[in-house]
Amino acid sequence: MSHRPHILMSVAYLLVLCTGFGMGGLWPVYLRGLGAGPMEVGIMNAVSGPANLVGTLLCGWLADRFRRRRETFIFACSLFTLTWVFMSRATTWQQLTVLNLLAGFCFGMCTNMIVIMTGLLSEASSRGRRFGVLTFVSSVSLLITGLLWGPIADSWGFPTLLVIDAILCAACVILGIFFTEPPLARTATAGPAGRRPGKGRSLGMNYYRLLAATLFATVASFGAGFGRSVAMSQLGFSATAVGLTTAIGGAVSLPVPLVLGGLSDHIGRKRLLILCYATGLAALPAIGFASTAWGFAILEAWAGADPDLPVLVRARAERSRLR
Image 1 (tube, rainbow, N blue to C red):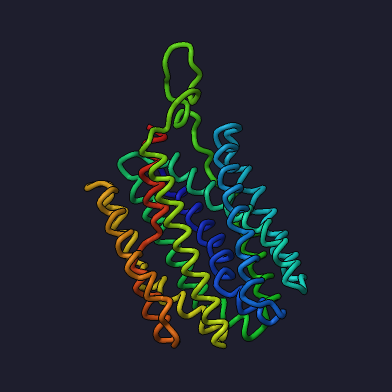
Image 2 (spheres, rainbow, N blue to C red):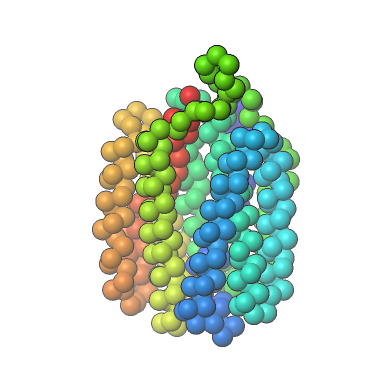
């Protein structure tokens, strides 16, 4: 298959992640300026999690039910664009919290639709590399937003930054028009006589174990990132300083996914997942003891060496689900 569909989806994935990851670490700084404390910041971040989950589940259901994945992505990105526009006009943390609910939903739909399409358009022999590229893109987005988003917020204000996020999402809408819709044959595999394809098929216990592992890894990852951002905000660090720690983590993790993606196709995912989980587990407790910019940066670099585990999990899950 041509590389063009994967290139377009990778670029769109990068832009969507830049909007979500870029603002994710800076919300505590922005809300502090609006008079919100750690509890209010926690509430705002908390609402996006369930919304993201709903968007992810709905995205998968729509992908299987209607097989209109490209149109679903375009719709979700269009709604995401409007959400950023409304956020740029919000003046209270309560307004931003309500809008963040919608943003989490759109972010879940946009990112996971790209993941689904990547799995469906990839051959079994190259699926690990394809997902490795997505993880690489995730690290690049952390690097870009860490270097640029904080200085933009400090120089021109958060409303301007939110408008930039809206522009990036609008660009994703345009890219989505040129996406390649996966062929129906990829999902409509033959089943027992008299049974419709895709009906009554069990995903197996391995799939649900991977799902549970992804859940715990994601909770730990987002919890650590949120805690670091709140701690740095409470210590008086600027948006630029908060962003730079994220950039360091992204820079350190850049080569990791490309290596692991290829290895996963040859030696399997299980050992790599165990190693990655162990690395992240060792890094998390140390973050609680950091108090200086260098301390946060070093620990972020340590954690940054641990790749985006959910993508490796999806690579294995999609293999079981699609074959």
